Each structure stands twice: as structure tokens, then as C-alpha cells.
Length: 358
Image (cartoon, rainbow, N blue to C red; front, side):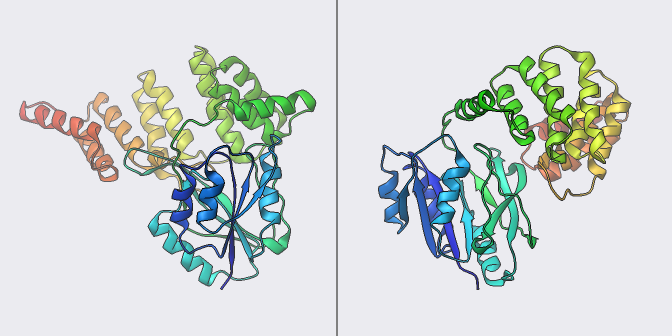
């Protein structure tokens, strides 16, 4: 059985760190906490869980801090978490099973990261991250923000997920500030350019974001999944800027990277449904339901069932097929039994049927 060092970087996380470490239970064989300048009780909280605590001066570089946490690790594998991450009980069991069965020649284990959850706790955005890293392989984190270890060697995939449960706003300007500082000193690499564009977009600077996203796509060196997301983001910027004639060309850029993912299909469906082109919208929502599960990339689970079915209900109603519309609504409700929209639609169709309509 492998051994695991849980490696974390923290600053002023006394409220969330205990929750994270408690959720990890007995999974780690050691805990390494690198503190980058806390002024609260974070360090004391880490020590209550038996962590080895080190201090590392913050220099606007997440990769540097994470590399320090890995440098201090002594076990077979490094598992990294952020303080506002948790391992849910069912996933902790999956992690325990993985720890017992992982072949020791594995260099990197890619695992799901639920980056956002809805009000019911259901994952709303999921993607894979390099979560377990063989220490002796000597991997290094790269990137001042949105840092990454580029997977190489023997890579395996698993189903033990980590869930992000943010409790506060944090510093909304931090990432943009770091990226703008890098940009003043040197040209950004493609990954940095992608995240710079997104940070600008998050700050409601849509015209600048559209220019940055276009430059990223035109460069042609970005990771495929980032390019698909960039096209979706570009379309959103164009819509908010009122540049309606440029929305569809932006979405169409994503088609250059392979079969359309459900997220793109839903975006195309939304484009046509907003224009009351019901046949075209229905076509794209049907495509969203037909796409196979992705191997990589950003996944919005609702785009693989609930959302396209709900929108097919709308399209079918406007196309005059109320029976199909009602059936699509019930199919959507199978994904979300507590959906208020599905309940409202059900009541509408029942009333329509009772009145002799449809």
C-alpha cells in the first residue's frame, strides 16, 4: 500500500482548514502545511491536526509555494488540497481503496474536481486534476496562478473526487493583479493568456476580455479544452457587449477542436432559442444528449441531461407538439426531481390537458 503526504499552502484559513483536514480523515500519513503569512489562528489549527508547518514568504507565485510543500513531503505520493476543499465521505472511501490498490509505478493520478456545487450539493462544474503525484518522479508546479503539474509518465484515472466548498469571497482581484504584473514584465504564455482573459472577463471588462480571448484563439498554441472554453467565453462577451452578429461566429470557433461538447451544444441551442428558431435550437439540444462522456475538459453536468431536456420541452411546445413537450419535461425531472421549473411545467401541461388543449 502506498503512503501519502497531504500537502497544502494556506493563508488566514483558520475557519476552513479544520474542516478540510477533518474531511481527509486517516487518509494522509503525514500533513505538510506551508503558511504564506497568516495573521489569524491558521498555524495553530494546522498543528492541532499534527501537521508539520513551514513558513514561506508570499511572492505572488502559487507554484513556488506548492513546490515548497512538495519539497517537504517524505511519503510515496503527494496529495494536494486547498483549505476550502473537502473530501466527502463517499469519496474518502474511494480514496482509501485507491491507496490500497494503486500500482506503485503510477506517476500521476487524475481525479475529478467538483469546482462548484449547486444549492442541493450536486456538482455544477467538474473537471479532472492531477491529484496524486509520485514524489520520486520529481514533478514541479508551473504557473504563478492557476498553477498546474503537467502529467507525464504512467498516468491513471480514478473516481475519488475532491469538492470545492468556498465559504467567502476571498480576494477577487488577486489573480488579475498577479497576471497583470506578469504581463508588464514579459509576454504571457498561452495558458496565462487564457486565464488573464477570463480574469478580465470576471471583472466586467468585456471589450478587453474579447480582445484577449481572440488573441488566445488566434495564437493557436492553447490546450484544446481551453480553446473550446475560450470560444464559449468569447460568445458571452459578445452578447453582453450587444455585438449580436458576432456571437455565432465566436461559438463556431469551438467546432474547430472536434465534435461539439454538450456545453457548446447548449450554448448553440440558447443562441437559436433566443431568436425563436425552435427547429435549430431543438437540433442542438438533441446533440447535447447524444454526445459521449468526455475524457477531459470542463464539464457542466446539467448540459448532459437536465438542461437540454428542459429546453427541448420549450422547443416542442412552440413547435406545437405538447405531448412531446410534456414528455421532455418529465425526462428532465428524472435528473432533478426537486426542480421548481419541472413542477411548474407539469402543472401547466396538466391544466392544458384538462382544458382540452394540445
